[in-house]
Image (cartoon, rainbow, N blue to C red; front, side, top):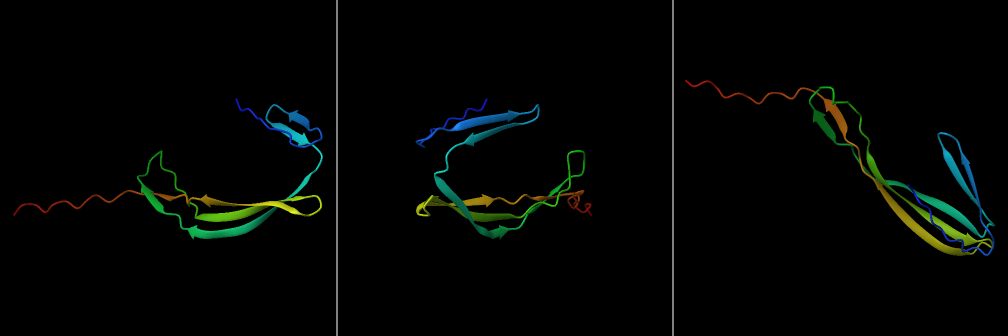
Length: 116
């Protein structure tokens, strides 16, 4: 079970609306607007290539292309309704690369030459 706990720091009320179907649930919080919130994306940087992993063929081996990794940053800017900035919060997220998988028979190690 997931619990949600929050505190209303607004001087006005908050309405909670829930909408559900057999497959989904949506919860909406409604209140009086006090802030403006903007996100500025810093773009991707620090790209890392996807390494390759070789596995023996079989039922458990599934070929995949892999995915490069990268870092990204964004900044959340919170302001009051008059346009004055209240806080600026930067955040960096690193997405690790996912290895490419090749399914192939590994060559047998070389055998020793027969004794003379």
